Image 1 (cartoon, rainbow, N blue to C red):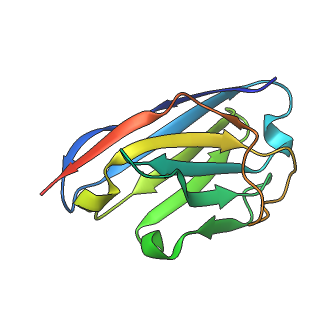
Image 2 (image 1 turned 45 degrees about the vertical axis):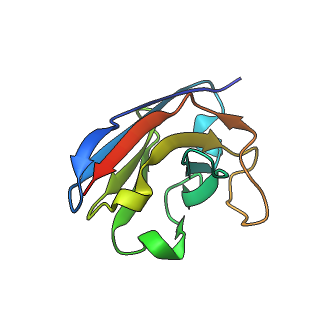
Length: 123
């Protein structure tokens, strides 16, 4: 099994930035695509960004393109999400997820998750 632990969330004013981290344990991390998702109260969990096993390909929802950057460091078994110019509507719990395959496919969701980290953006 791969275990994921997110960190880096917090309270930030609109227009501010945060860097989220996801630390993974397990043998399969370096061969798995990884993703970030978020879920606001009363809403469904939604896709934010994903990265393939090697870090050579990244994917983003349209609303965060140009502001968010996903990256990974397989040597340290970690994946990151840099978030800039944050908006109040992006207040949510952010989750790191792992895919069973090395490449991201938009029709699939991760099959395992971290516990989440809270991001609150104030106006």
